[in-house]
Image 1 (cartoon, rainbow, N blue to C red):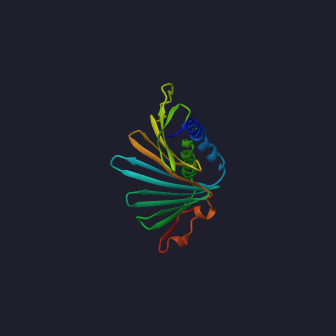
Image 2 (image 1 turned 180 degrees about the vertical axis):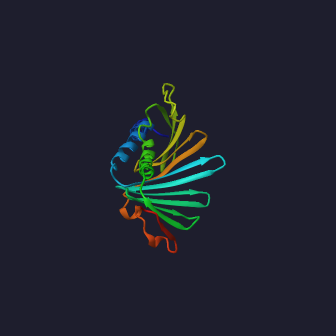
Image 3 (image 1 turned 90 degrees about the vertical axis):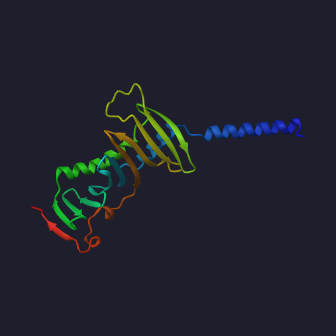
Length: 217
């Protein structure tokens, strides 16, 4: 039979455990704020991000954008078709898997906007708690799964009604963000930093046997 002294010690021990658990617990706001802080530490670095757009009829269009300084590499896959575009701000190289050709052209405003779009996609991970009610839906050993629901006082029509954000434990890096917009489902995933110039540069040796068409003026 447990005596009163042991019961008091046990109660004290349980109380300390509960206090420690409360201190270690992370609220969804704290998690998302920390996520933004960790992403902010990499501002100015090269980065990579994949965006999946799931649309009726067309299916899923997946685009992987990698940037480093003024250089960019964008790979888009639609079903079995793949197009890869490289740009250094002055010249574009476009590989079409269907024709097995690489077309070289002078850079245009469109290519510069594509580079900007890649960084704009990552901005969706910032300011998430503004105009949204956030709650932890699930927690695993590796990540938190957070639901962001548009607040009633958020009148911005461009903001999606809900967003699902997955944050990695340990690093607090974002693993993914999913939402529905205009009848399509968009998922941002696989963000990474520390991109090298080699990763965003066109290298002919990677495409042996490809026909190169130079259309530069």
